[in-house]
Amino acid sequence: MTSKNKLALAALATIMTLGPAQTMAQDHHNNANQDEFRVCTPYQADVIGFSNNLANFQDEVIAPLARELSIQSSKIRQRVEEERKLESLVRNINNDINYSERRLQSIPGVIIANTNLISAKRTEIINLQADIVKYEAELPDAGFFRRGTLKRKIKGAKKGITKAEKKISQALQNNASMEEESRTIPGRIISLRNRLTQADSNLADHRQLEPSLDSMRDVQRSIGNRLDSQEDVRAEISMKLTRAERRFKKCQKVDSDARVYSHLSIMASRLQEAQCDLDSVRSRLPYDTSKAAKRALAEAHNIVCSPTTPVTP
Image (cartoon, rainbow, N blue to C red; front, top):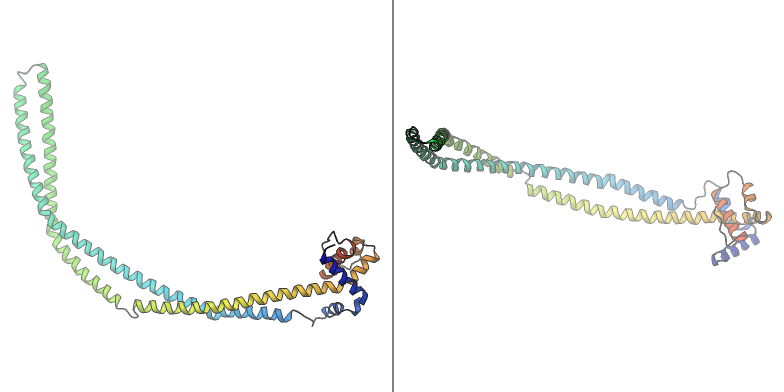
């Protein structure tokens, strides 16, 4: 028999000696049946109080600060996003101006290169035409194999002329296009510089808005610090609630054990009268038997009848 069961047997012997109606446990049992008796009520009240405090603190302090911080953060994001858009516009206009200026500077060189290409291709065409005349003049006196070679050379020269003419046409079109572009680029640059002036002005005005972005961030940090400090208060209330819940559960356990204790002697007597026939005793219990009484029956059986084979309630 375990030391725990030995102690329980000693307690049970004391109960049975004094008589159920005379013990403090029986007084607890009697009082427990009265609605006004609530041994754990003060602990439960603490749990309810701290729980309400935590909920109210969340609703009245934490939630408003969190909303205020969210609104301030949103305002800052909008301000920053708008500034980034204005900065991006300024960069893009500057890039367009730089590209246009480089393009304007490169056009004369490209036109000269195309003009040189046109001249070279025209000379190439003249030479190819002379080759064709030469090859055609040799054809009547050429032998069979020589005739085939000359015809291939004539065909190749004609293809060369076609390609050269195509190159000339492309170069002429390119020069015409760039000459037109060179006439429009200066106006475009002027327009871009006007847009840049306005974009720079808009960006400067945005950066001068009140409250300033730095000031808005200071407010954000202040709200965040206030929220952090209140989070510490909420954590303290939550810790008090946890301790109150622990005390309440402990009281409920003690109260439950006391209710079981008040039934223990009665159940032991019934088991003795039934010669430890547990099923017989259980079958005679009223349908509304409390959980404490059922647990007392199991405990009494474990102590009186089969201490080495525990029975569950």
